[in-house]
Image (cartoon, rainbow, N blue to C red; front, side):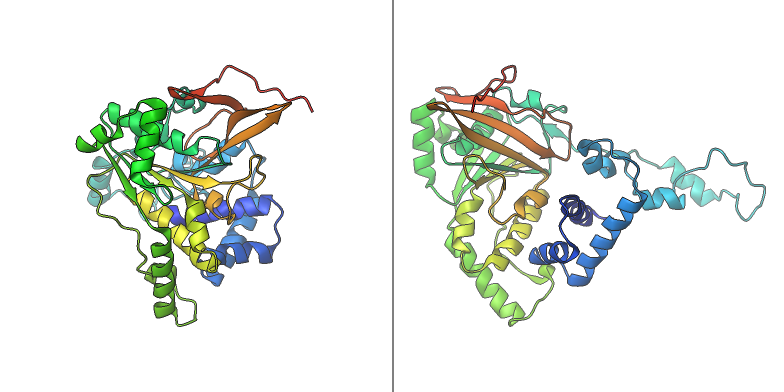
Length: 363
């Protein structure tokens, strides 16, 4: 199973776990561009796994077992690539023969290479993740209400990465590049202009309405009102970046969703295209999204959190007459992580995360 199908299956498992009915699950998959027959196949695979599954050992292993063990359960059951150590060796020439070609393949075998882990480089954040950072190719959805510091977190990661020789791109769909650079200079003393001149950082302004109109025009031309496979779309997102990035921040999906206000299906299909494009950069990607101050849903369309490799939420919790900022890692496929809600503050140095403090609230 390829990585794209593995993600879809993972999303289907989670929908089943949330007790969604069959019709809702199939429709959710179709909303992000999956053919109805394939959506039904995914549902049946997820149901079959449930019947055959052993007792759960935790969300971390459930969500990332394919990456750590490399082979699907189906392959393990069929015996491909494995030996049954409890059985006696066969003496039949038909079932026990090693050709010169097979021997040659064994000699050229190479172990699986795992993706590089890059530190996020924002205060003590990397200590919240067992691997000490995020894997290249991963896309993390960072959700939170207004004033929780999402832009600051994303830019601080790019800034500190640039100081350590790692290149970053900031794609802004809201504020202008000049306004972002001015705010970061005044608030934290970060000279982003200098990093741009050294080609360690690029801040690119994108008009979300231009994207929405281009998507709508493409859908109208290609579909003629009928459903076609998403892979046929030639949707706009590939940019001529000035360099190959180590990190990419997209700010924000909320601005993009407003541009697609009357085309929800187009927005969901474009989201899938966006996440797949980011994955191809082989960078660590952080996608920002706006939510309520204390959200129960972490994305506007409900699809982003399934497409993302990880979900992180920033809260602005009211305690008596003040608000306390705190963050939580909801899921992360590539590593075990801290499960507590962790307090943080935004100071003249940027994000300050207090991983050894507890957050208390008296109602």
